[in-house]
Length: 101
Image 1: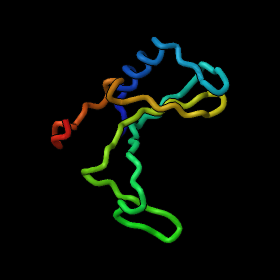
Image 2: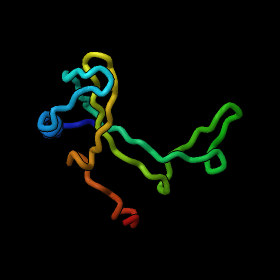
Image 3: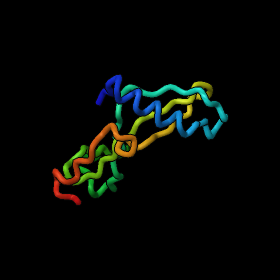
Image 4: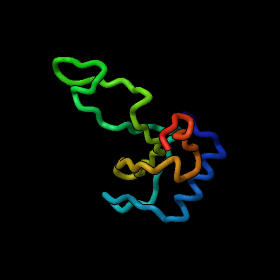
């Protein structure tokens, strides 16, 4: 999902208030990805919808847990930090929609 300018401003304000710095190089300059990404829960090979000889390819399903994240990139070393898009207020939880709450 692409972030709007308003969402980016909200995120930047929240991150600025916390004075974040890179845990690797201590740099305080960073850039913010303009997209929300999702992390999904790990599925073991036996649970996969499709597998290959050299590994497992898992396709998302309604039963998988997905977690939306905003990515911050260190301006010096390129280290990536993930922040919860839910906690930052740019994505609303849809667990009620699926009856998971």
